Length: 316
Image (cartoon, rainbow, N blue to C red; front, side):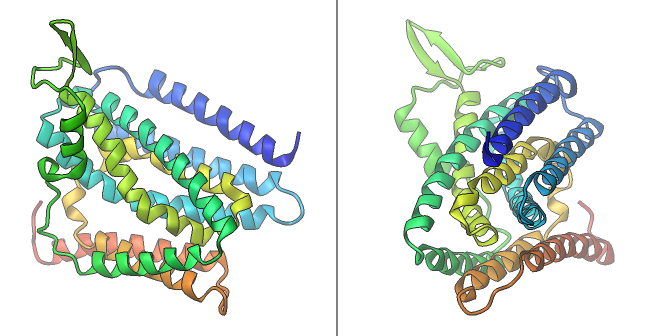
């Protein structure tokens, strides 16, 4: 068995066992997730991701283990930080549909699993494009620079409106829905017809909305791992980051409005990565520089947000 096959096998086994452990021991059906439980779950997924990074480091031969491990962790950290934006939107969606707190965990899990399927397809297509057409990377770079500039100057008051979103309108057209109280159900049968409940709509919306975020994040990851032959590093970093999103949701939902400048931190990261992709033919920046920029911008924006609120005596 080749090294790549071993890594794929280990990764698959780890993900399956981790999900069984998370759902069987750390989560229970209809359980309201407390801050303590969310902290334990978040630590579990982060530590598991770091452990897989160590596996990549020691498993790869030919002196590439260290480089691949740093690339993986940089991509993971980038996806993890970009996924924080998803949380703000998820909170609005749950509130709009009136989802009960006891159903949060199960709905989030199904929505995230759907998002993973979409991301795998997206990465596969992106890898093929990058492998065949070098100029695709420049398109990604321009797109990320544009996104970074737009995100940095966007108005914080512009709030996501689920009822005006394209995903909501699409689902209303193609799904037979009901406003009846779901009581934890995703479908209700009435008069021999199947109706999808609001919980089902939330699941599909979470998956579709994450696909929109992936349009930014997947190209960004290709700047960290531009080699199409290393799709495994892109897959694993993405999947670990997205699977940890559920616990991160419960950990940050009460403090989401404290990070007013996080968006600017993420925007600077996207700007840096976009510029890096555009100049890579003439200037090669080591992957560890990208890692430092991501850490500095994200942590700096979070600390500055908290400091700014405390300085001005702003309460949540």
